[in-house]
Length: 313
Image 1 (tube, rainbow, N blue to C red):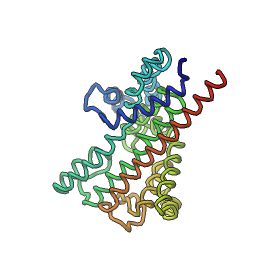
Image 2 (tube, helix red, strand yellow):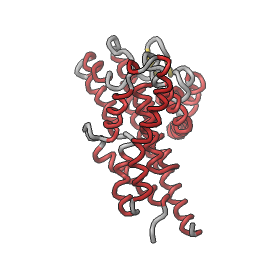
Image 3 (cartoon, rainbow, N blue to C red):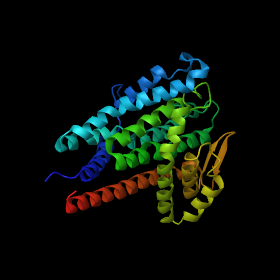
Image 4 (spheres, helix red, strand yellow):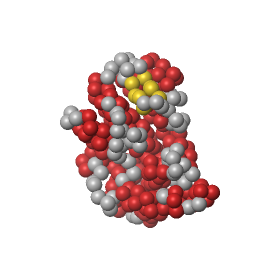
């Protein structure tokens, strides 16, 4: 009997997580997301367009980019035989989220700081858009762990969530939108061109961000830190620009008892523990939330698959 689509999706989700932990993200310019970034880099230059037409250009190229990136994912999902889908889909889904590499990038910042603050500044510059030239050790660590916390939603939970709902095309749409936002969604000369990408990224991450917060609260509740995490969410969750990242960062800072700070912009958390002390707990929380979501999603998909098979849909 041919497995149902949701049963296949559950198997693919589990397999993709295994693939991620085994191989991570190969550093190749032919990686699908690297190719996506190269394409965005071709059209994503404000100087190419008159200022009054940049928003229109941003919308048109947003549609084109999403379509081109998602097309192979859609074709595999729609037309591949189930056994071929099971073989290819875990690798395609893996291209849409980054768990192992997220940890590696953050840990690389921590390791670089052991060699000196200047080396740490160079390493963290790869993760964040802020000016790192004058950051001290604590603010370098903050930038690194903030990136890990924000990307817990953007790079892990969101693509897995949209895969759970819409299979590979859902994950691909999420990855395309998030990559465009990461490259163009800034309040500088790219503001008009990246307007559509930034707004769509906010909408796409609205539900996943709140799922992330809920799972963080469950995790920290099991460790006796629920009330502290909840207090910081209510007090500091609005301090970061946007309506998604701040609540996740507040939950992480409150639950680990540390502080995230972008000089001159926001301070989130109380800082009872330094980031050197809380770093291991942030890593554990990131892993726990990823596994919790994966278990919930896989169990739900398997149950739906069993129900579909039983009623003969």
